[in-house]
Length: 354
Image (cartoon, rainbow, N blue to C red; front, side):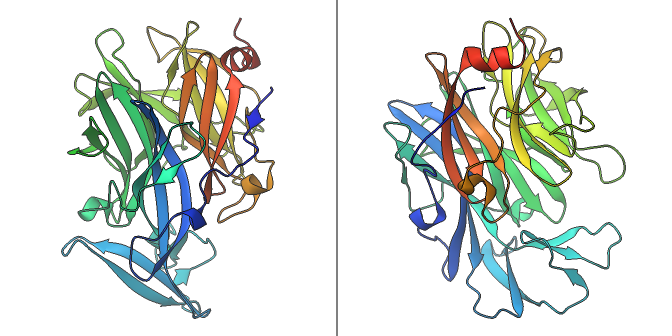
């Protein structure tokens, strides 16, 4: 399938953004939710910062102290056998049998980036959403945005010692906001909310991931009010020997087409290579699958997609469809933001929808 990658990718890099936290450096500007507001393209940009560390024998981890609502830093000795430092993103606990993480090596929050042409962005200096409370103590990640009427619902992963759950706020102007609380409790992430009611119900894709049994796969849930979700159903699973055999999750907010709801989702294989694929769901009952791609639409190929903080990753949290052109904003290698375009009809044909 023909995909145009913007020749000036990446469009936002860590060095383009000033750190907000004293004594920290920006290491990631990626996985942004996307919206159109008035004459602007808005990116809800995930910004990851980590403490500056000049000692190669040590590793530092940052977290929000929920009692003081201030960022604190803990230092670890790399020789400490109680912890596993093999993954650059997390510090794992070797004492616990499940190998669960104890701390993250960076802390994320959300800034707004604005653009008139959809390609050249100006990033605001201050966070729009910053971690607060014990459910967000390790940061907030991977926002998505659903516009319903004149309200923009922004929801994101809140990370804490309790696990990862989905928190939502709402805004009408991307300046003032109202916190709606946690709408999916741990363990759940990769939530996308359909941008309109379907037969009187709101629908959301999500990824519950049990620590006991079950795989990280996509489910669908419904709600009367966007806050309380139920009638949970398994939607699609992993596929053996394919590009999405390791884990899958919803990506962009579903796009309404004449053929069905188009969902651009991410899939990773057993080697943690992340690609972007497509799924088409019934317009009147999105729990019904019309088609699913056999091969990815976008796979890591360019150097900015293969090399970075966590390489071989393309990951979208938002796309805009205008004049039958899908404008895809996607994170690359957990480091930067990139931009691509493709025709709506091309992706429908790619997943064998006539």
